[in-house]
Image 1 (tube, rainbow, N blue to C red):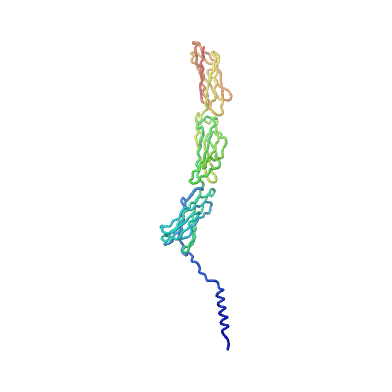
Image 2: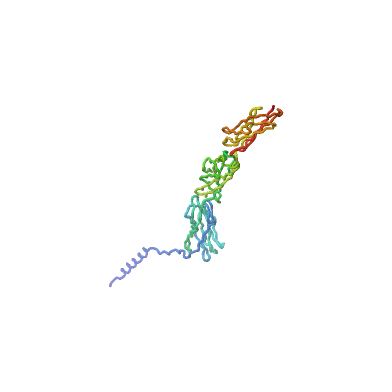
Amino acid sequence: MMNLRKPIIASSLLIILAVLAAPPVTHAQTTGVIAPTLSISCNPGTVAVNQATQCTASVTSPAPPSPSGTISFSSTSSGTFVATGCTFSPPGPGTCTFGGNSCGFTSGISSTTISCSVSYEPNPGSEGTHSIIATYSGDSVFIPGAIEFSLTVTKRSSFFQITCTPSMLAVNQPTICSGTVSDTSPGTPLIPTGTVTWQSSGAGTFSSASCMLNPISSSASSCSVTYTPSPGSEGTGIAVHGILGTYAGDTDHTGSAEDESLTITRRSTSTSVFCTWGTKCTATVSDTSPGTPLIPTGTVTWSSTASGAAFKPSSCTISGSGSTASCTVTYSPGPGPKNSQTVTATYRGDTDHFGSSGTTTLFA
């Protein structure tokens, strides 16, 4: 009689060993299957570098409870995020934390929307379009997602101001014109750099056609040049020269310009008289305005308080060098009483000089 128990026992042992050697059975974790609604906005939507904008991203479910997980922000360009707050809407039970560039949420039982707000400040040199991306991590119910906002980033605005001292001057008299450029955009200011170029509507000379800006504060820079109006540029006696300063801008600032009006006049003179009784009288005309003097030109006419007095010739043409010019005439007191007489010399002026007069008193 055959013994069947041994094969049966052997088969049972093999089955047991196979079961023990098999890997444990695992159950797949539940993943999100619902697509939430994502939204993002930044206000303002156009900013300058170093000017912050407030961006808010929201994730909304069709019905409570709200999504949970993380909302994080990133940018395609250079800038800094600082999380400023997180909320549930409608308000209800739930917790959220924020920091850096993200917010973390646990489900709000009676809410449908989670929102994360950040401040974003574009770095200097990053002008252009910044894509602000909000990424939702997803949870066991809602699938991950991302949405972006196109932020326009510009250069910072500048304001240019000119001051010329003095603003009323004579030809050949220098004035100092200073140009100041200020950063006027909101946010953290940047010191303007670069150059200012100068032009005049009248004839004149700048000490330099441009000057390099130097910082004077955390938001402003300035530079100066000297401007000297040319002889003849005062027109018939008084003229206006428009001084135009132009700031070209720099990497992070827009350009700007302004003009200043200068009043240009002839140069001032003084006239002195020296006479000897019954012989000669000399008139000396001096240029008295600041700056480089011009030699006075033109004529001097004569008069006396003495009845019958005579000058030969009755007028004379001045000549000289540097800042003075003179001329001499013969003076005859006349037949009247030989008491005191006042002699007056009158200079009529020229293209670049105002007239003047001087007197002297003669005693017999």
